[in-house]
Structure formats: structure tokens, C-alpha cells
Length: 269
Image 1: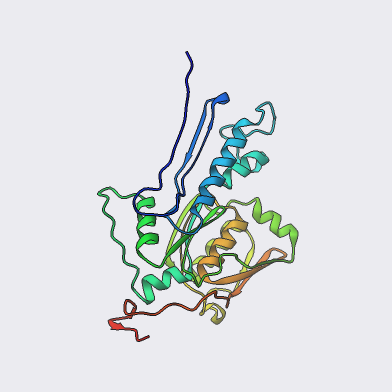
Image 2: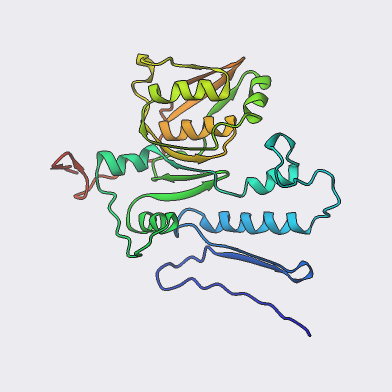
């Protein structure tokens, strides 16, 4: 009996850009489907990356002793497994432009019609009904606006400490909802085993944004980038220490209109 497989995706009735990706490899009975991300900001790139990475991984010889087995710790993961891991979202980061839409301008309002909404439903509603966009920068899913630079600034002055951070797990799972720098410093220091500055209650951190993000199994280096992008900061990695400071970059000025309010008062253009 011959089995023939095929696949097709449809853009639907709402968007003009199809961000779904799939791959069929009949020789090994592999069927991979990746859903696009919210209709905005290169969701098709993220889904294609996931499909391509998984397909290549599954077609490579499995006689390699470096292939990861169930139960292996991250320190023993093969390079193949690390590549597969990097195609998966491991953190959801609200960048300053997105938090301003919620807390400063208070105009990020979206309606979800699904009676049992998922995280994907929420992201689709935000990116289709507000100024918030979603971009995938492996392994971080960034919620941002047009003003936010999507590349963190990190200077490495001590490669040995950078390697240490890359091989150290931050936390298995953590959620930070509108947390300031003083809250994060002791957690970072305890988990990553390096000194962090500014110290708690330092004036140097008063202009940092408050941090809103959720993460799953980030390593220390990735955690630094997630924190920097959430708090509008940059960092320098020295010998067993990491120094954060403000990041003054912006791509565009925030757009003000009749939907923006401060407190109970509309903002004039």
C-alpha cells in the first residue's frame, strides 16, 4: 500500500501575510508544522527557523554519541541539541515601548473572543489590535513597539566569566511582573554566582525601566540579555562581575494621539 502525504497552509481572512511553515519528509515519516506568531514582525522567519532546524536535526545520523538522551543535563547536551533548543521560545519579554503602551499611555486594549484563550490568542490580539509587535530573537520572544531597539548591548571584558554564565542555568521557570532592579539584583547574584552592580537602593538604577518577563530554562548569558531588553539597559561582563547601566537608544519617538492618556487626562498632540 502506498501512502501519499501533502500539506497546505492558508493565510485566512484577516492577514495578508502567511506566517505558517511546514515540512514533510516521507523517507523518515516526519511531519513538522509551525504556527506563525501574531501576524507581525517576522513571524514567518521564526516559524521557518523552527521547521528547518527540526527537519535537519531529525535527518542527521543518530549513531553520533553526542546525540542527547532523555535525562541528560544541559552541560552534556550535544551541539545538535543546542541548535534545536535555540529554535524554541524560552522567554517572553515586555520591552519598554510595550510597557509604556500599558502603563503610561494606557491605550493597549485588545479583545479576545476565544472562551478558553491561550498565550498565542493573547499575542495575536495584542499584535493585531494595538501598537505592540512581536519579534523572535532566539530564544527570546520580544513584545515591543517601533521605538525599541531589538538587539541588546553587552560588552564582554572577561571571556572566562562569559563562558561561566553560558554554562549556568538561571532558573527553571520565573515570572517577573513589573519588578524593579532592587528586586532582581539578589536573585541574579544568587543564581549566577557573580557580583552585580548597581547595588540595591543605588541611585544609578533609578532610571531603569521596571521589568516584565517570563522565562523558562535560560542560561545566565541569555538571562542578562532578557533583563537588559526588559529594563532598557546595557551590561558589561567583567571578572566575576556584571555592571548594568542605562541604554539611551530609541528608534522612533512614541506616537501620541487621542488614544493616549496619562492618568485620567488625554494627551494632546
